[in-house]
Image (cartoon, rainbow, N blue to C red; front, side, top):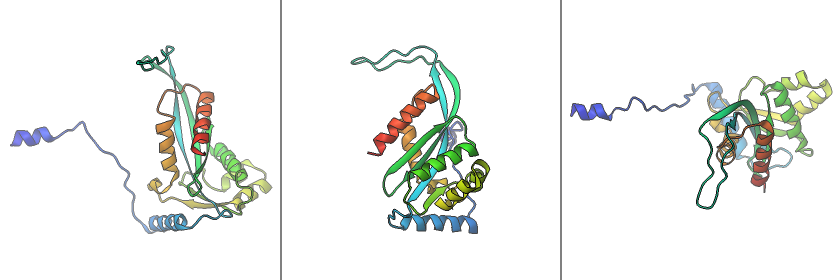
Amino acid sequence: MGDIKKNDLKPWQKHQWCLAQISGEFLARMEDLLDLYEQPYDANFPQVCFDERPCQLIGNQLVPLPMRPGSPRKEDYEYRRNGTCCVMLAVEPLRGRRMVRVFRHRTKREYARFMKALAQRYPHARRIRLVQDNLNTHNAGTFYELFAPEEAHRLMDKFEFHYTPKKASWLNMAEIELAALSKQCLDRRIGDQQTLTREVRSWEQKRNR
């Protein structure tokens, strides 16, 4: 019996998860997001969720052999690392609309540029209710560091920030879209930023139909 129990142990297997500390701040932010998600669609106050993820650029050492009837595409097991990019994504869950951009870096400059482009997508909205995580660049102060004061103030007035609790990014619906993007578009070798941008734009257009 002891040997059976011993053999049931699989030390090479493990599970990882993120445990949040439930505090007053955690509950307040969670309830804020849940209340936001319950609100009906309002074109004047669209609900938009934002998130970002790194993406490795992986190229082939040898030219792959194309697929043929009855034979899948073949690629060499060796590959070439070509650095990383950052994929930023915003989704409006109540309308099923997305905006995705690829940047070489992930700094406050890229965040500010993305938010400016996102605001341009909603010229008639009074305020964009934006759900995002707690990264230190995700705030209105970034606008003032990158843009002229007038432009920064305009963008600050355009957005209403709603932050996920710490270690609770699962409350951000943009994570669902990033998971779909990863499975449908990024689960293969893409060797350069130009190709990645083209593929991501194509995915965005198909998802927005």
